[in-house]
Image 1 (cartoon, rainbow, N blue to C red):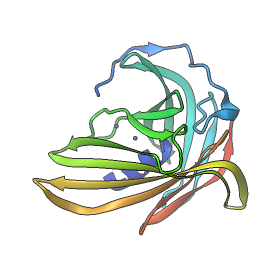
Image 2: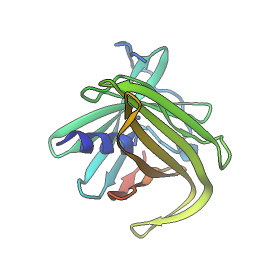
Image 3: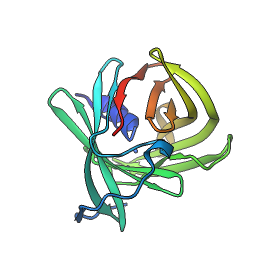
Image 4: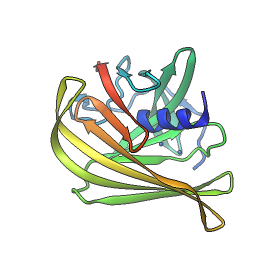
Length: 205
């Protein structure tokens, strides 16, 4: 699988990257699944479509990273497995993922308490390339239908990724639209100008 597909899948499962520790923790963080926009209860699964269908699985394993307990989520494409770690605190959902050539950085993927129009940014240097991710809450409380399934209490997050080297853009910015449904998780990712990856089925434990 090429690096772009790894990146897309990573963006989806979080649906993203501060140095991390190695201490494992068997105690799962308390969570009200029905209120979560990214549930992480053990055994929960999400099956996604698109050009490269894949499955995300909450394994129930946890890891302490910078003093915070993260829950392991695995993205599986055939026999390939990519693991990321999710943490929720005060309505902020952050992900740490181990991608080849990417730093281990905690990325806030969703800030559910922000109002519509609220923004945040994350910047890092990857292989000497300045990478910036600009997030914005575009809508809240949506009702949305994906692949014939209806969801309510949906938050729409837009992420615009840009890449520069020595002051020059190395590629056009990439805009991605994420839709998170309360009690379900990520239901749709739209990579503008490329593809969409809808949630086909899920089982929240």
